[in-house]
Figure 1 (cartoon, helix red, strand yellow):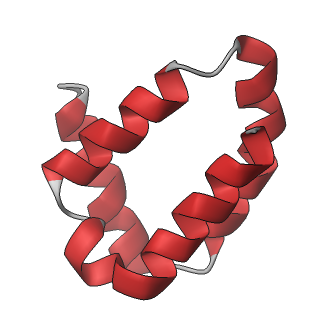
Figure 2 (figure 1 turned 30 degrees about the horizontal axis):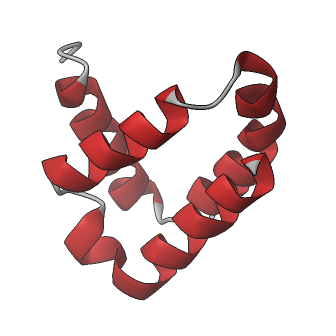
Length: 75
């Protein structure tokens, strides 16, 4: 479900944020999961996904964002 996407991300980052957040395989896998959601489910998941990211310290959030940009070849 969409809510479970945010909860799963929150749980993974809480348990192993340093190990997972900067791993291309983690980012690729989670991206693949999000791509499987319908547009409506993705929109419904956004608040929980945002909440999962909000508690990361700014530096870690920035590092993760950079990895996501690299995954999508935007960096």
